[in-house]
Image 1 (cartoon, rainbow, N blue to C red):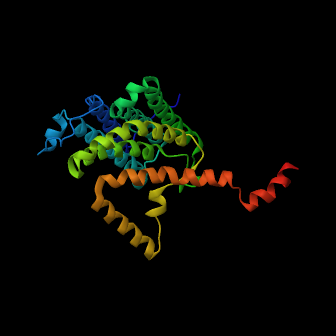
Image 2: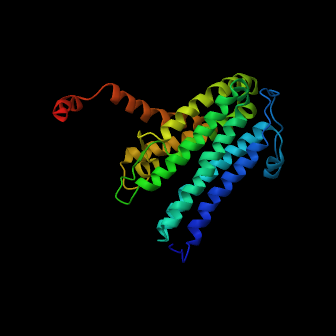
Length: 288
């Protein structure tokens, strides 16, 4: 047995911050008590963050739980950067990162889904729990496969399968959107939104779970958009996108998240159903 002699402190703290956020997201989700219907009036406004932690309102806890998952994503994004900047990358850090990701991006979103969609669970109890379990299992399998298959020679600009943080962001964004629609946009349409979300989101998440263990290529957005030199128009596009996000706030995140999930999957399905001329001409030779 090989014994670990030293651990890089700063990257490890960032990685454990990811785990702590995921743990608290589960704790907050456990406080959500949606009976399937809510009083469709705005939740009481909160003056301080301390009031948010102590609130029993379901949409307050949905927002807090979703925010903690997004905060875990920030810790997950920066721990590797910190390790590279301090030249303290190690196998220990990589393994610990994946273990923390299972909690923050596997178990926490799955548990949040169950608490967020009680009507689906009440109508299809076995299916509701099965979808949540499927999501958590696929996240764990996705992370284990990534650890085994990835090495320094791989193309870091692409992922084989939907990355777990992106999958978790989809669930978390709908949790925050529930709060935004009820309290900041128009609480009168919240009833219709909540009715549809509780019935369709679990089905969409089941597809998201399968995409995590697929081989569909997904772009690494940080690598492809921010690293290296880019054209002037590329930079302008990023700036305009950031301004748009700041303007429309949280209710744009589900649209972007669903687009990131769906577009590569649809492109791959189209290429599979409509083979290119190259694949058509090479098929007979390969058969011989």
